[in-house]
Image (tube, rainbow, N blue to C red; front, top):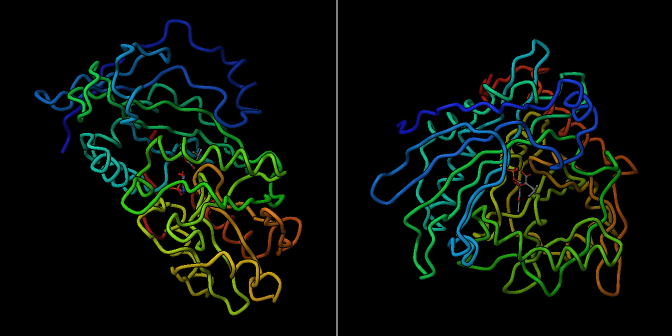
Length: 365
Ligand code: PLP
Ligand code: COI
């Protein structure tokens, strides 16, 4: 169902072609933003309305806006890829739309229909298509960030009666500067990112806020990222602050922690579970004790480990550290062969270099 159409107010002073080319040549991650943004407003009485494309810029919020106090906010993360013929595509947007609707229900926010969600991406790409990096065989893309927040100015604790939805976009290179160099992980033993009955399986800002202390502890201990464990027993692996985890066993099982209710159901994760079958691997979703990681790399039962997500694609995982110990990395200095194969299969589909046999791509522009 479509509720929204989008009016367009173009920026009078867009970034010059030269400056944009300079940014696209070396985008980093999340540092630069396109000329425009999309927004829409929801009110309890009026539903979704006032879809608009406007110049990218500061938003006006009252200091009493509920999101600033009670964190009633959700977001999505996806990418637009330029294909060889210049067209622009995104990957499984129906899955992001469905996840955003699930997150909305959990955070007592209004749902946006799949048609309006995809329509909002198309509306932004129509004016900012030039910001999608060229198809040059690299892995640059335009990262899309849809988000929704309680914009009502009201300090009582209840679901907001006015909500704003927006999409911004940011040209993106690799999330980790080191390329395929394996990331070192820190076991966050005391800090969980989410718990049973909480919001761990929703993509809401609060989960990321609660991951930061563990992440900081990891960085202080020389690691790139923290691994979060289940909050009840602190024994089972959940995920990283912004990525899911996979383990390849020597018997050809591709194991990932099962969806416990507090893990985010990554779209990369579910795509890899599908692709595993093409590679004659057995996809397995089950409880994975952190002890199994430590033992498995020592015994040789675990032969590769990688993290995955939209921003990071597929990133090899190396050493594991914790208070008082370390476990060595497996798979070599550029990740194991299966890790690299899965990574390139995924990228080849996303960039239109391999046939999209599962209908995962949607054209945006
Ligand atoms: N887990 C968390 C906590 C995340 O933030 C993300 C990133 O979106 C993922 C997993 C991977 O999800 P996806 O593959 O849909 O990007
Ligand atoms: C993503 O992969 O899209 C994420 O959201 C991870 C991080 C940038 C928050």
